[in-house]
Image (cartoon, one colour):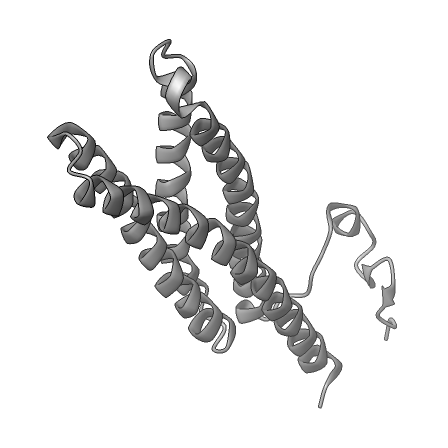
Length: 181
C-alpha cells in the first residue's frame, strides 16, 4: 500500500472520528428541545390551554421534530455515504438542515430578546437558542471543512498550505522533499 493511500485512509479515519463528535453534539442539541417542546405541547393538549397556546406549542414542537429528523437522517448519510465512499455532496443535506435551524433559532432568539413582552416569559428559551446557534455554527464549519477535505481526497491532491505554495518546485511541502533527477 502506498504512502498516499495510507494518508487518505488516515484522513478519512480522522473525519470519521470528527463526525462521531458531531453526532454526539447533535444528539444533545436535538433531543433536549424536542423532549421539552413535546412536553409543553402535550400539556397544552391535556390541560386544554387556549387555542393560541396550542398552536404556538405545536409549531415549536413541529419545528424541532422536523429539523431534528432531517438532521439525524442527513448526518447518517454524511457519515455512511460521504465518508465511506468519499462523496462530498452527501454532506450538503446536513449543511442545509443545520443552516436552516441556525438561522431560525437566531431570528427567534433575537426577536424574544428585543421584545419587552416576550422576554419576560421566554428569556431562557432565547438564551438556549443562542447557545445552540453558536454550537450549530461550529458544527457547520466542521462540515464545510469535511466537504473541502473529501473533495481534496477524491481529487487525489496532497494537502498544501499557503506557505508550501511559495516553495521551490522540488519541495512539495516543508516536510517532504522530492529528489531532483
